[in-house]
Image (cartoon, rainbow, N blue to C red; front, side, top):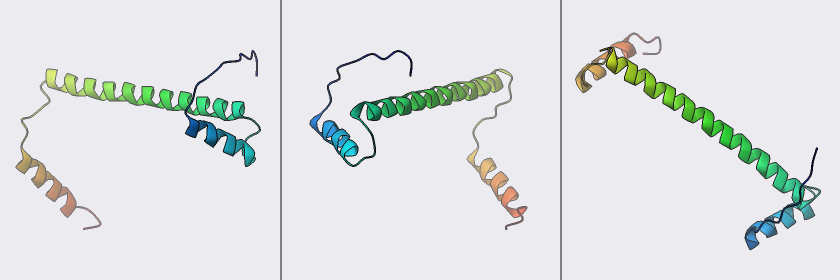
Length: 94
């Protein structure tokens, strides 16, 4: 586990009760184990959000590049509906 550092953390009474309950039920050996798992989950979620944000930025950049290169048309709902109808008529499920 490497270096261990003791910290004092303030949590709500409901959170403390949930932690004590999980330890009492045998799901965890200690409250520290629960906190470590929660922090691992938090790190994973943060990394996932970061990757999603990077992908969103890349997608926006593709759109901006398309605009700059002139590959964008004015919005035409009727044209979009017609394309959708044509594609659904050629679908093997239609």
